[in-house]
Image 1: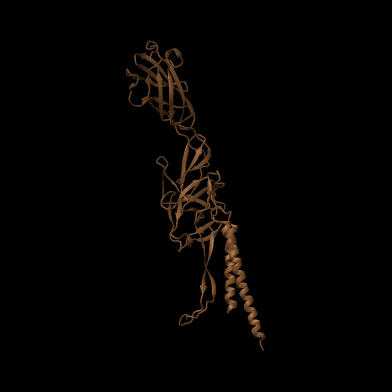
Image 2 (image 1 turned 90 degrees about the horizontal axis):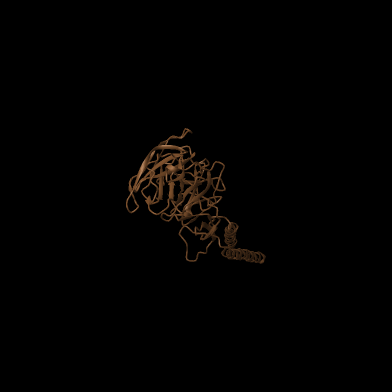
Length: 405
């Protein structure tokens, strides 16, 4: 009997050594969660139960449980490196099979999908309304970065803030001619875009036609657009009329793009002082652009940045949590699979509930404490030696009994 009891102790100590060795081996693995060997005593029970003088039959390995404590976050500077602080898990898909991970080292494959080192695709909520910034949280999809050029947008509005001098020359007697600088007092230009993303030069001309009264004209690429519009100022120099946007007319590009019909906001215009000046000329159009980078916000929204200065939301990273994370089934490659013991996954986004916060440009390190594991090694080694000594002692006793005559 002592032989089998000590043998169970050897097996338990050996299992403890294996668990500790695996922890130490993965001390540098991103998102790794250390394991703990848990043991239970063994009793040989009779039909009528255990008597008060029963002696245990050894020890057994009851479970190897993972400890889901938070690991330190190491900052890498790579925007696709993601770290979670909390109880959440990243969701990845391998040909439709969902798995869960704390390792946030992601990269882009040849097709633009965000994948981990094993090729599993990161799951995200797809964009529902790009203008409102809403996402369809009812479904998961593979997160894919846009590899094509961002589409252009035609200019539809210009907000202009300018000042016209208070003592201008009255040009009401001279007909307006955009090619004759003597027929206007001041001009300023800006770049506008058509529906194909081609740029055009829009020029505003201002000519005084009497006290506190100005005519303004628009030309695009040297072609006059529509008719002039009148601006009237109050005695304090503020714009009295118009109080709404100004439309000069429609300009039709020669490249086949849609006609340009631009609304100009002049309500912040002023007239005072001795000089003409422009403070702001903001237009809402832009040319096409190519992808230059990716930004990920703290709530997991993935933005693509383009050379035209625009940012496009591509999706929102999905985060999962479980009632019992220790019940997850280990699948290797820093992945876990859902199981009955873990409970049903609850999906959401970073920052909600106990899912945790998301940090872009960082990775969660292993939660293994090397010093603690080295102490565990010494303890397991002593346990092994002690059980081996039991076998040696029992062998000596048995040999002595055999030798009795």
